Image 1 (cartoon, each protein chain N blue to C red):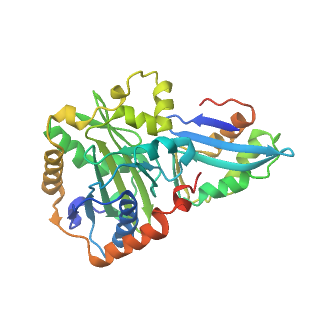
Image 2 (cartoon, chains in turn purple, orange):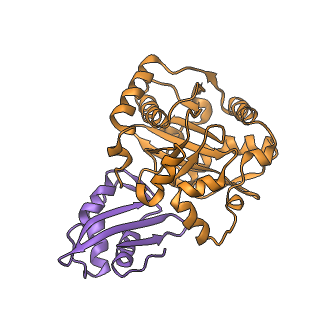
Image 3 (cartoon, rainbow over the protein chains, first blue to last red):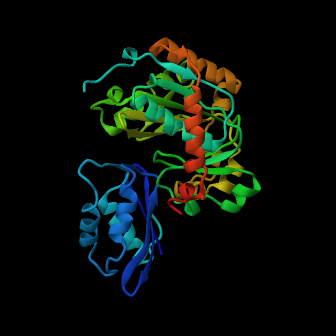
Length: 96
Length: 258
């Protein structure tokens, strides 16, 4: 399943995932955003992996926020953008 | 740490023979770290390409961005760089690519987007002298009335900032669209039918050979910021070769985001 969210300014936040037994699996975040340190990318994948597929979006956002250090720099990506892309992947809204 | 100015630094120029895409990726990593550690003076490096390449951004999905079959058919090497941003399609002679390796003090305290424009002020001046009115389109595009000219990306690590830019000199847009998937989506998304409309390369805008454009850019940098001719040191070349073999030329890195 594939979902995209286009940030104001044009950067694309993309989520690819599968659902098994009601939980997210094989979650992959990607896009042309900027993120430092770069290890945060796979930390977000890890935070999303195993979440319940019917979790409210706000809870998904909080799970993402929890793995982003205060010192991280984000441009063209936000926890809300990622959780929106997750919702779109789950509900078949492919377009940004 | 207080902010430094361009003139506080003794800028070095590296413009060597053609190198492979993975060597370029490795040189960017090694030279950024050398400047960060204070072993190398701040440096401008002009790239020359030994082969065609697609350079994807640090966080881009390999399969979402690149048509692997088309890339193979055109003998295009796909590499992943250490900075974020979008994919670049490169053929030798068709782009002008440069990197600036600077101490973090140069952009200390600047907002994220201001740091981009600041690092390329000299390029806008150089383009102006070549008759092209160009400006920064936040975050990371250099554009003109005719269309986009260049894309920039920055990454900060260990006391240094890497700022690298790929400018379209001449471009085979049909080949680019065969190889880059996102190109097709972005074009359809923007309702632009002609790819040539989105990117307006330097060749058509200046009428000058690529080498002359590079020469003019170097002259402008030298005049504005000062610049001494330099070469890569043997240990830098060795470190970059090791780094390419261990990381940038490996499928594990290129497919880090499959």
